Length: 44
Length: 555
Image 1 (cartoon, rainbow over the protein chains, first blue to last red):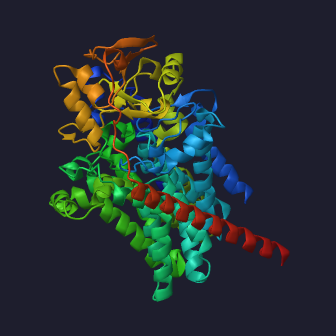
Image 2: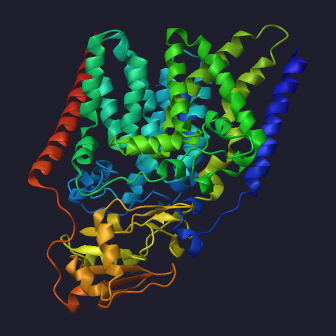
Image 3: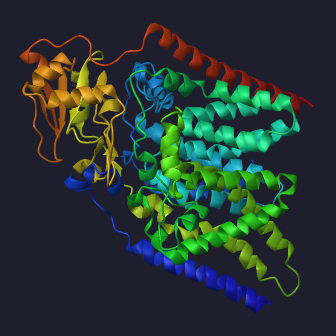
């Protein structure tokens, strides 16, 4: 039973780390261009 | 206070705010604007006729920043908020073991709602959220002891100070958790709710010169899907903001949003162990989800828009996703019970369930690494160029300044890493400062709420903008450079440097005496009485808590 539990928990944790880590690492700093600055939902 | 709770809370706080704490300067982005010394203005108390968006928080920041630099005030508020939130939610589940309380702290302080509101710069709304555990504690105490209204009074006033929506949310949490069949408690809660929120209610109800636009705003600000998993999955996992540019990159993964929903399911399942209050917690969470989703469901935005035309104050719901905040509290309580439930299932041969308990504690961090270390270093500190101080010294307390470019109120300064931030001029400069307050969404422009904005827009379109501005009572034009070409009205240049140009229109002719709207005497009295009653409620509540604390320590 311990093996099954450890496998499920490990799979969940590693999936979260992998997917979140890869996506977070790909996120890039977006500067504010003049044409988009005043469009609030596009600016950061 | 338990050391484990303090350690976990401090760890989470440092992990989120670390870059801000390591040096000088400010975090300036979105609506988060702090200045070295915010001059006092009647508008900070809602006495200027404008809508009370940051009343009375601006007044408090203004007073405190006369003594403590604004950069320190910013750190104190943010750190204090997270510490209060973490310790508060731990006390809410104080009967649980330390690891269960740790799970509650991480989920409450580290989730997509916190990330998105922080990156939008909505620090005051974030503070209101971080006060919710204390509201819940006060509510449970009030239900247990009908005479125990003082803690509820204190937390309701503090929540209302943060923002109108925080005040409303606090009342909602208090009502769901405290009210029963006893009519006396209903009356008491109603009285406290009204009195605590007078600080913004009176200015809002008596504002005659400004209006909140509801034209298309409910659809524009509706909760939306961050990933292919859909809007419901986003909202159930505490995300789904309308402002797509602050969505953390990992939240665009449907798989990750669904994994986050698994955490929600675990927390909701944990609520079954929350004793007789479980129904109330579930109701609170369900109400928050329903409110957040209302403008996003088919016909919801249209319905709200139609009703908002007749019911004043409903425009408060335009960014309905912010009202998802109580769900964070509910899930935090639930996940603590879920961790305990998992622990209770551990028998010989299932010791590996401890890894499940550990996963519940760290899952919020694993699912949202972007919140770590100032959004992974994206939130960088900035310092105002000296020009801002120089300009502020040239403008008088009773003078009016118009800020250009006249195209929205968000700016991208080179010295602030080109990150969009609400124009600091109204808080940096003394006197009346008028900025174009139209909010430009992707597909629409939310009309201005301030009639002065309409007057200045017309003046700038005049053949003689300088003369028209003088007639509108404007003496100064502050031009912020580096954001496109700007037509500057004719006048004498009083200052030029550091990205700022200050133009004195008075050199070209007399400036009309009256610029902006001013509240009448009766309105000022009403507003001041409202503030006075709220302060009185706060003081009486604090005195009562101190007295009962002393009694408890003597017995």
